[in-house]
Length: 411
Image (cartoon, rainbow, N blue to C red; front, side):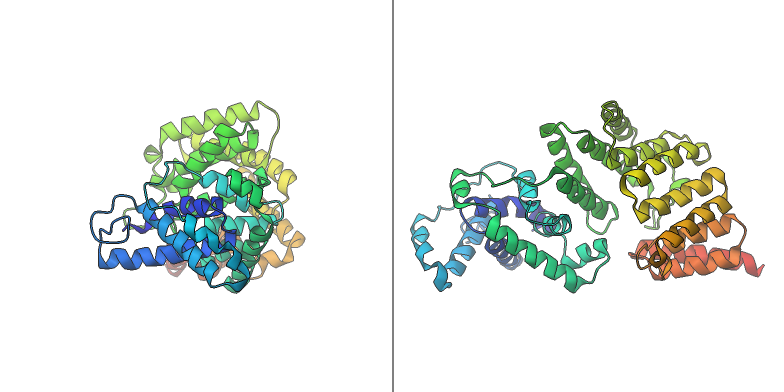
């Protein structure tokens, strides 16, 4: 059985258990146990029936729901404090075809419960809905894996105790929907994780954002969808045939998806016309300017710097300031970019400490120093950036950059 299929079924199975009355933490544990049993069963017999025996696999979702529900009931029976729930055993739904309803988006809102902090809501959603491992989520947040595991466990306990009321469960709807801004941050993180190639969730993030945009009339939802489409349009050109990274300036723009670019630009223009600017709209505007340039040399860097100024005003994020330094270096020359980088270091001293707070800081500094002609410093910084790279492809690219400059210096 394809692991991607298992991950795609997980949100719907988890939602069904929550609707039947399972608290969130117990339901998530039961689904995980069912997935393990599925892997074992399907490894031994690639075509189990929905009832657990041999034969063709007609309904994998129904099979997982049945097994997960039984796992939940088994856990409930073993818990003395929940013995009064044992009457539900008699009402166990019979195995059968699962309804063709996609509850994934609704599950996102449950994980974005107002009792959770935004960081915990994002982490819980990435774990429960996105199917990411705790290690992957910890890397996205730049925290130790043990810290993230504690955060996710605490979030599950909060949702289990306060997320869904029994009356709402009986009526089949979730209690107190979460915050849209938190859901947008979740979707953006899922997209970025998928876009990096570590876990291919980019298409799923776009699908869910389309659903959200169809249900919520909000310019930032549209801005996020436009941003995803514009970035996803470049995906085919981001890697070479050998899997190595291709920087934006060197990409074959003929491989960009023009239909996705046109759709993203159209969505963005409609959102900007509403004059309620947000960070996702500003990021999408920057992506649109890159997409609009026929060649890298024709990129309107001056306007990109102006959009980064808007982003700094909206977020005051060190990551945004780092990207702005690159844009300033392109618009006004490398020394201006280095000055912007120095200003960032002065405002956030930890950002220059071996890239721990800003992993790309050394790579940006290396690029600007190379453009300024300081090859020795650039080579050293490329090597430092490679050491701190978050994935193998980026590490290889930065290592090659350092080797290229060292070879030039030795001539």
